[in-house]
Image (cartoon, rainbow over all chains, first blue to last red):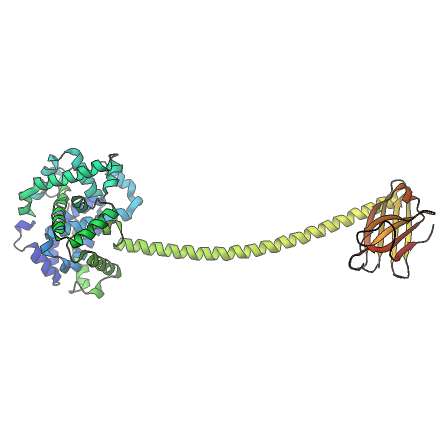
Amino acid sequence: MHPEQAQTTDVDILRAIAGGDEQALSALYDRYRLILFGLILRILHSQPEAEDILQEVFLQVWRRASDFDEARGRPFTWLVTLARSRAIDRLRSLGSRDRTAQEAARDVPDSISDAAEDAVKSEQGEIVRRALRELPEEQRRTLLLAYFEGLTQSEISERLNTPLGTVKTRMRSGMIKLRELLGERMKDLL
Amino acid sequence: MIAAHALSALETVEARELEAHLATCAECRAESESWQATAASLAYAAPSVEPSAELRSRLLKSIHAEGAKPLSRSAVKDSERVESRAVESSQVKSNVVPFEKSARRTRSAGWMVGALAASLAFIALAVSLVLLWNRYNTMQQEMAQLTDKLGQAQGELARERDTLAREREAKELISAPEARIITLAGTEMATRARARFVYDRKTGRAMLMADDLPPAPAGKAYQLWFIAEGKPPMPGHVFNTDAAGHAELSDQLSEEARGATVFAVTLEPSSGVTAPTGAMYLKSAAS
């Protein structure tokens, strides 16, 4: 299920996909569907929309695998970034139509999901959630609003009724702290 | 700032500036990539969820349908092609998915659909505007015609009312106890012309109804005169005929004029004169 358990590396899989190997694509899908679908669903709060985006993401991987440059980062980062970008695109294009649903879902946007609620538990998830819990509340909130709701710094400043400078500081401090906390451990995992 | 960019939390302008810098600075690019990895770990803050099993087979079916050449550009839809090109040009083959662009600028299929919808809406709007404009013009013409017709109808109505009023006036005049009816005959200037002059000796109200008077030349008009014995002619109103040579005129006679014995019509300057200067066209027999 997870990259460290796989015999074939993600980079190998992407190369095979770039070569037109359909099996490789299904292998990549099996490897990352849970984390990616969880991410997209958390952003969109809608099962059909999230499935639509997940399919788009893998179609894009299929078409653009040869664009991936391993010198520039891990496949995981690439995939997650792609999925989040697509999901936030959709979130914005849905705009006000689903605002009510989004507002309703917003009551818990900055909560960190409890491991017990996870459909699938994962070691990486545990590490990240533990790290996030160690962040000061307002830093965590800032990071999660940006990440899962696609808000810019000034939008967060408006949403939280907090000065823009404060939001910038919190975001920066939060990111630095998170990187420290994840540190060496994540390097092995991602 | 680079950390915030990894969260795509910068404003569009800032993000654009930063991207321009990243394109030229390998050191910052490396830093940006490291922040992207940190940001990506946040995906784990969301609970993993199993998508439906159908999605997997649907996906595999669609990639199979696209063929074994995933990068064959011809197999890629237009929207995707635009997207790939934009990604390539802005990123110079990088794994960094440009959030700012994809999220806030323009590029996804969703956007294309939106743009297409907007274009269609714009075209529809333009067409409706043209149609409305034409309709507006047509309606304006119709309005103008209707206004014309209304004007004509009002004119006719006014003339009818005028005629009625004159008829009533004439009737009242003729039936007044002290009414006098005088016949005027055409002179050698207009042998066929004839007129009737009615006036109430008590009130001085008077009417002239003339027929077969030749239309007065430009700048000229007919004028009525009241002539009492041993006195200079007293001027009455100035009038003109219609195209058929018919004329009707109301007047108010002074007490002096009511004693007139001769009534005449001469051709005078259209503003009227105080003493006759022109030829006589109508004249009553002395009574």
